[in-house]
Image (cartoon, rainbow over all chains, first blue to last red; front, side, top):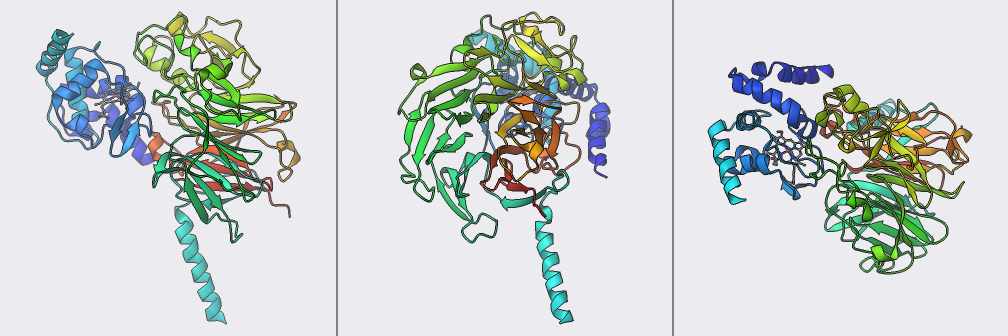
Length: 137
Length: 413
């Protein structure tokens, strides 16, 4: 009985379309990228780790302003962050080494997973913000 | 009469039902556990006074306070009387010679206690040490005292493995690691002088990434610590470590420390299978090459990432004799063993004599998480975090999820 939710969860990762009801290549790519680059810290269910790593569930950082979200991935984040009254202390390094397409795919994935229902992020949006950030430096 | 009995029975049953949201601990035969405090907040370390007054250090303020003093005034075995004081969050707490010591994430305070072990000036503690590094990551300052007037404090490295860019795949290690000047070790201060800073203390031992459990062993008069090992071997070096190796490595470690010793972080980690100090891949390692010949070896290596958060040497006579002078270690449980299940929400015992382990470690108390398989640490109902030994020789265990305290006893029949 106890095993079932976990098995389901694993199924979600191996065959994400079944759980997402969405079969665009983007979401499969996004799930794979999440598994590879994000899951260790943000956890399989996107719930994060108390005191350390913030959740990707029910937070405006994920579902809200895309520019802020893309910037977090490109620049990383290193200041205590408060989400739902909880403080998270660990830093997150930049993922700027991923391609624009990969960043778009993984962000689209987290904006549509774990109960989040938000809009997609396109490769062009990531490219645009990467350029803006580069011009600032 | 029958009705009365039935009535009693039903009251008993409903009481059990309310206690149902409790978890059942698994203990060695003959031991029993009782929940003696509940819902006290994010309880990190705990300390007990000779009269049984229990002090809890909180990681999150409760009504503006970060220390709880609990008493069992009606002597029913459950703590019901509480006093809140101390306006700082933190982990470390200790009672010694009618003083209560408590740490924030950058300072250590001392409260004089009255004849009933209550703080005389709960609003005005002495500040013993201040200005310790607090960068969020690994900021908790665990403390313990020796018998000659010194206090030892862990200053965790605000870093995973001293990379140029912390926790970034491909970022190289910094050689030499500048963090070690002010963190990544144990510092010794006077337990009675006020307003000490780094300049007044000494770096007692170095090369320790993040010690959370520490205790003074009175049998051999030495400091012992448990260390949280590094993260991200598999995620950052999949060509050297598969997911299973990344979940098991490196060992969480248990050291005996003498003044001036170096445990090798960040340059090496302890591989509990090879029983060797392996060079960190950020510093040129390949999973096989050894390094840091000057660094000491641990007394014991535990499976990776289980987070040993508290250490206690058992000095009581209540438990069977094999427990005397052995070490209890409270494991907080892992977050970074995925894709494997998370593990280690338990208290471990290691038999010891003359300060040296005499056998393998064993799980002593388990079941805190309330679940057999844990994918993400948030699923755990309770996570062991602190340990203290009651005056009667029972063992108290705290939990920083729901703020429970268990008393584990060995009732003699």
